[in-house]
Length: 224
Image (cartoon, rainbow, N blue to C red; front, top):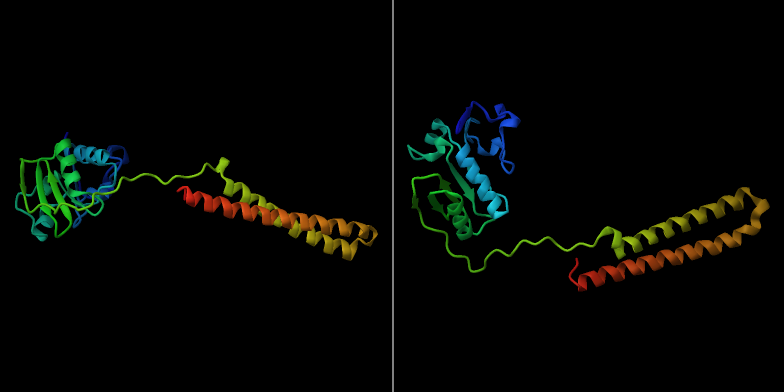
């Protein structure tokens, strides 16, 4: 069966939905919530999403006949067959999108540059509207930012050392106060604790300095 109708998209069994980058709510009629699953059309939509490697913002997919009339759609609109999609171009180069859509099997194309979307459907082969103007600058390639491995991160190690040393210094100071007030028998230890506290403070300052240096060095090398 190539088409399945549901009175509301909420009625779609989870096991019956096999298009991972889309949801029944996205494909359902915006006006009524009804949903006609057109499997060949959805297969092509998923293939287009896979080919482009970035989200497709679906402005309109299936339209019930009553909703299609309400929005002024064509009397024989492919949207009523669940075989058409209006896709926003906010995150796509229209020329690249069109080429990819043709490659996966869409045949009908409507161009709406003023509204910012392209209509695609299963055919027959035709097109209408004025194409989007050619962009002076193409989309930059989307590459993930470089990140340090946490296990090898200088900023993590230095920051952690600074944190531990700071907490240690604070703990020593508290211990000094407690001993001074309640443990008069071991007052000779107080000076040594004071020395330890200053050593830990120095370690904390050293860790902070290393963290700042590592961060600036990462920026210089383009790792941040």
